[in-house]
Amino acid sequence: MSLDTFRIGFLPLVDAALPILARELGLAEEQGIDLELVRDMSWATVRDRLIYGGTDAAHLVAPLAIATTLGLDRPPVPMSVPFVLGLNGNAVTLAPPLAEAICTPGELLDSVTLGQRLAALISLRAREGTKLRFGVVHRYSSHNYMLQYWLRGSGVDIEHDVEIVTIAPPFAADALAMREIDGICVGEPWNSVAVERGVGVIVNVTSHIWLRGVEKVLAMLTARAEGEPEMVHRLIRALYSAGEAFIDPERHATNAAILARADYLDGSADMIERAISDRIKLAQGHEPMHIPDFMFQHREAANFPWASQAAWLYAQMVRAGHLVKSDDGYAAAQRVFRPDIYRAALAGTGVPLPGASAKLEGGISETTGVGTVQGRLLLGSDRFFDGRAFDPEELDAYLAQS
Amino acid sequence: MRIAVIDNSAARAAVIEEGLREAGLTDLHIFLDRHGLAAKLEACSPDVVLMNLENPSRDMLEETFALSRALARPIAMFVDQSDENAIAEAVEAGISAYVVDGLRKERIKPVLDLAVRRFQAFNRLQNELAEARSQLAERKSVDKAKLILMKKRGISEPEAYKLLRSHAMQTNRRVAEVADSIITAESLLGGDL
Image 1 (tube, rainbow over the protein chains, first blue to last red):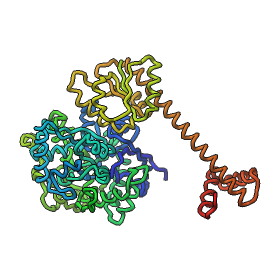
Image 2: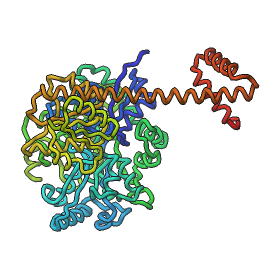
Image 3: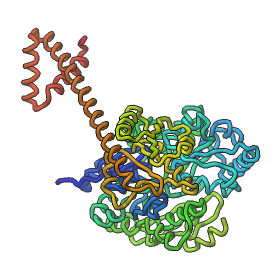
Image 4: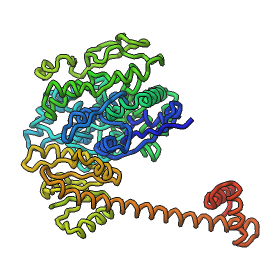
């Protein structure tokens, strides 16, 4: 059987795992796809290759797919997200002296307490005229919006008291070491790299800001996604199987060894395995701590593109001043996430398929069964650190409160 | 027209610079280091920014541009949708370009074309260099394998080469591959070569 070639662009991050495993475990091949992976060093380049035909799909920070669709900073190009590559998996790492000022390195405080302490420090430093500066990996990244959500919810005046700048993940440790930045919100293994070098202490994880927060997605040009549905369905089935392999504890070490290879993350298999198995070393000299659901790549329909997740991101983009709210823009942003394609791809496979396309984000406090069109599905808590919930039908009311 | 070239390869930046100078574009500013890049660019205030696509600082640069839209001289990306082919070609060559809003297209096009040609030339040079290096490495391993055969089997150099070549033909492999396996076997078997 001849295979169809399909190229996916990615950045060297642990959450690029599903496309990598789909290729390396032969899961794409089983679906008749010769999956080629194209590694880049910036999201801008991953996006440009996708737009100009260098790749067929991309591992992308979710808000960038929305920003590209809405035409922020450039002419709009409609994007579709038929599959979520993972939830959470990022951490907040501070320069050691700052971490020591608000917590005991090696311990993980709850986000409310830690947020209050950090807010007090940020306010003090702003008054002294030495504003703290935080790095995020992209202007339109979940990292930026999660960090801002946490800081704002903790009482920080983001517009006046703190600086947030973009730092490429591979430079995170360097930037901390040189005190270019005081802290960073970045994905693994880059927090752990800073910890191992003794230039950073992990003080929080994004799963403690929004449990089940959307992270990387599989993005495609809408024209492409709709033009070759059958091929896209096969790809989604391969990625779904890769998700099953990713969460298998028996496979953690092998998966980490694959991701660590020079073509992929070109990094330490030990460090990658810690992230995969939710064991994170918070500070140099400490034992890794088990942080349940640090990375959430597959269970509970984690790969399902809930339109309400795109809606939440849109709300944060408005809040950050990155776009001006409009009804058309809000509708277009939600249409980027394509639960319809996900359902079509996995119909008849026994995979649980939610009946709804949107949910009340942050509305589940304990494991709850949800309506499906296929299979049985239980969803665990998806709470935000401040206990608020986001109803996609009530955007104005939500923005008015925040 | 003031042009900023940002590249993490000094060699490639020099190749671009030379090409632009030859074309009479002399108001050039080269940036190799990512530290303080945003501030330096702002001070330089270029009309066109050329950056290698693989530069990890692109996201930082684009953020700077997004913020500078509020200033008097906004910098916009070079994405004229009427000319997608030119951009696709630039992406293929490994280059990204940004221009000040309002700069006329006919003034930008020659600069971009030239940069693309220079990038392509640089890529070609790199490939040729890599090829030359691997040819050199292959010749070295063939020489080493010949020595092993000469010593083990007490044959002359031409005979050793003939043996290598005929084995390569029989097994449908390249001479260098056969040589590599001989060297590997020899080192595994504890030979002194």
